[in-house]
Image (cartoon, rainbow, N blue to C red; front, side, top):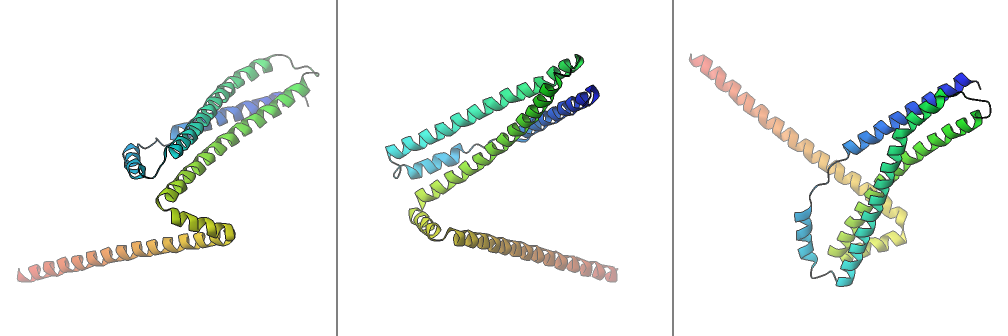
Length: 215
C-alpha cells in the first residue's frame, strides 16, 4: 500500500466522520420537544394518594432519579464524543501533511480502523439509548395499569407465565382485529359523508333545473 492509497483511506475516513457528525446533529434537532404532562400527572397523583404508601413513593422517586442520572451521564458522554469527533478531522489533516514513513503506515491504518469502529459504536449506543427510553416508558405505563387495575395485571401475569407465546399471538391478533374494525368504521363514516354530499349535490342540481324551467 503506497502513500497515495493511505491518503485516500484517511480522506474517506474524514468524510465519514463529517457525515456522522451531521447525522447526530440532525437527530438532536429532530428530537421532539417534551410535552408538559404536569396537569395530567397532578390529576393522577390525586387519585393515587389513597393507594400509594410512603415506601412505594420513595421507591418510585429513587427509580426516576436513577433513570434521570443515567440519562444525564449518557448525554454528557455523547457530547464529549461528539466534540472529539468534530476535532478529529483537523487532527487527521495535520498528520497527513507530514511525510508518511514505512514504519508509520501500520499504525495509521490501525488508527483509522479503530476510529471507524468508535464512530459505529457511538451511533449504536445512541440508538440503544433511544430504545431503552421507549422500553422505560412502556414499563411506566404497565405499572400504572397495575396500580389502577391490580386484578387485570394479575390475570395478565398468570396467562403470560403459563404460555407467553400464546399470549403474544393473541395480543397480535387482537391488535390486528381492532385495527381492522377501526378502519372499517372510518370507511363507513367516509362513505356516509360521501353519500350525504352526493344527495345534497343532486338536490341542488334539481333546484337549479327547476329554476331554469320557470325562467
